[in-house]
Amino acid sequence: MAGTAPRKGGMITGINVTPLVDIMLVLLIIFMLTAHVIARQAIEIELPQASQGTSPPPTTLNISLKRDGTVLLNNEVITAEALAQAIRAAVAAEPKVQAMVAGDKDVAYGRIVWVLDLVQTNGVRSFAVQIDPAVVTPPGAAPASGG
Image (cartoon, rainbow, N blue to C red):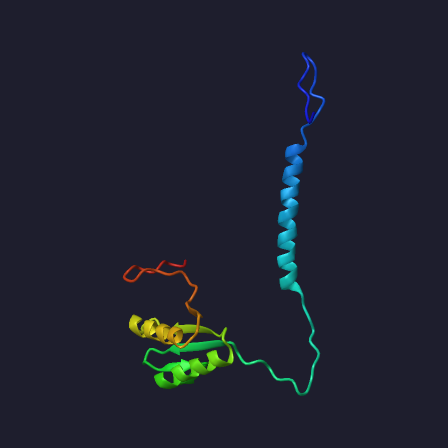
């Protein structure tokens, strides 16, 4: 039906288009899904202005550990007790609050784990550790030359 067997000494007169239609339908589905994702990210909206509007509170807690042991919450120096209270208050205000923990590379691993444990035990369920996305070389290895 889709293709006929060649006759003895004859030419093939039919082409099997079933695989072509299958491939085209798969491509159509892929393009439809990716177009939806791209269009959703590319929609630009110019919001109206109002004099009484307030910006929503940030839903991300930025916790930083400096080399000298200083702990910062949203770029303000804070003690360990105040950090725990601030985390609990943020979770009470917004249950889906997130935490981003950034530590200097010379900070002890135990301090980073302590902060992650403090964040998690005080109710934050979504957290991440901030890194430098540069090429990472293992400790003790010679850094790769860039030139």
